[in-house]
Amino acid sequence: MEKNKINVTDRAIANIVKISVKEIDGVVRLCDKHEKNLQSFFKQKKDNSIQLSHNDQEGVEIEIELVAKYGISIQNLALKIQEKVSSELKNMLDIEAESINIIIKSVE
Image (cartoon, rainbow, N blue to C red; front, side):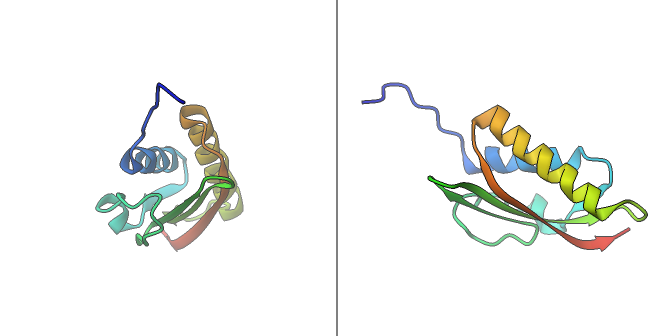
């Protein structure tokens, strides 16, 4: 029986994703509704900018919608986001990201 247990809320996990993405050069912003509703991180409820689901055996699946900066390499931006989010979740929470899908909604 496990004595000590650490619980991390869905909101805390979602904020790690949000902060990680916003730190990357080339991301103008996450889609507007992202700021308002991140409470359904592992419950597979759709948010307009991020959709996440959790599978205990396979890891976390993440879909992020954002606006990219005009003139940058979209492919390189997506790769940077995937690497950063995956690394932060692993380092901070020991959570594996099974997939991190990036949807570019617009370019500004």
